[in-house]
Amino acid sequence: MGNPLPKTRYVREPSFVARRVAGELLLVPIRRSASEMEGMFSLNETAGFVWDLLDGTHSLEQIRDQMVEAFDVSAEEAVTDITELVLQLKEIGAVEENEADKVGGS
Image (cartoon, rainbow, N blue to C red; front, side, top):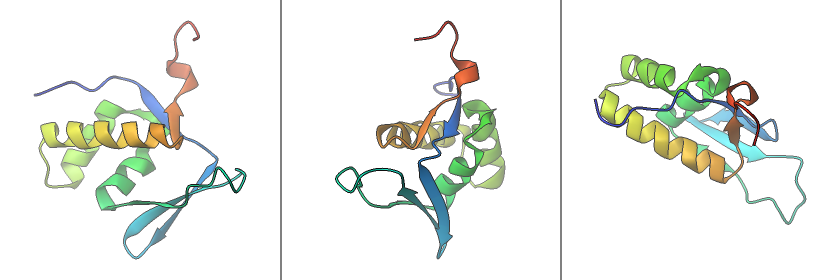
């Protein structure tokens, strides 16, 4: 079944606002200075689906399973897509690990 997903749960960073426009989900960073604003980020339908499930209660495995059910993708494709998306969202500061999943601090 390819590379397994970690059981980590991620939560959306409250400093990003999401709005659906013309079939896409736009992420807009807020509460930053003008020099830190890098603009809006656009997520397609499947990425928006994943974003909606990054609520701190769904593991990446659960998101994969729901993505396979909702879209015409294999589990392997879903793993690749979710992994890449979460890495990109972490890079821009839009998601972080759920604090409840961090064991032992640091």
